[in-house]
Image (cartoon, rainbow, N blue to C red; front, side, top):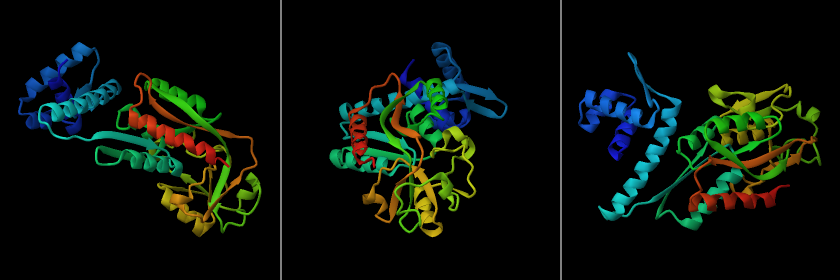
Length: 302
C-alpha cells in the first residue's frame, strides 16, 4: 500500500466518480481503476462498489477512507514542515448534540491553545451525524448522552463502527424553559403539568429513531410537540410559545443569557453525558484538553 494509492482512493471518494478523479490526477481511467483494484486486493476489502450508475462507497470503504484521509493529513504536515518548510496548523474537530456546555468547553479550549497554530472545527448536529463524523475521522470526539432507554441501541451502533462511549458524569432530568413560563418558578415540575405547553425537540432527519433523540422520555405521549433544527430556534420558541425541552440542567448563561430556567422534572430518570471516540486511537493533546474542559461542567449540575 502506497501514499499514491491512498491519494487516488480519496480523490475518487471526493469526486464520487472514477472519470472525474482520473482527470484531476492526470491518469487514465483504466490505470486508476487497476490501481484501486490492486489496493483492494491487498487490503482484502472492497472500497468502491461499481455499477452502470457509477460508484458507491462500501461501509468498509468508508472506514478505510477515514484512516486514509488521516494518514494523508499527517503526511502533508511532515511534508510542509520538513520538505517545503512551511508552517502548518494542527487540526482538531469535535461533534456534539446540541449542548451549550459542550460549545462553551470548546471555546475555553480554543482560548488556551490559541488559533495561530491550530485550526479548529465544531459541529453541533444530529445524533447520527455525531457518530458518523467520529467514525469517518471528521471529528476526533463526539459528545452525546446515554440512558437506560437508548443505552443498548447506542452501544450496538458504536460497537459496529469500532467506536466506544466513555462516560463523564450523570445528570438528573430538568425542564429547560423561559423564565416567563408559568412553571419556571416551581421547585419541581410533573409531566402532567407540562402537557399544557409545547415540547420542543431537535429534528433528527432521516434517522428520526426514538433511540437517537436528544431528549429523554421520548416514548411519552406529548399533546403538543414542535421539532426544530438548531438551538437558537428552540430558545426563541421557549420565549414566544412558552415551550420547553428536557435537558441535563447544566446552565450556561454566558452563551444563552439569563432569560432561561431549569426546573427539576418529577422523575427518577438519569442521563449519562459522555464522549465517543475510536477504540484503538488515543486522544490527541487537544482532545484530552477538550474533555478536561467538559468534565468541569459536572460542577454546574443543579
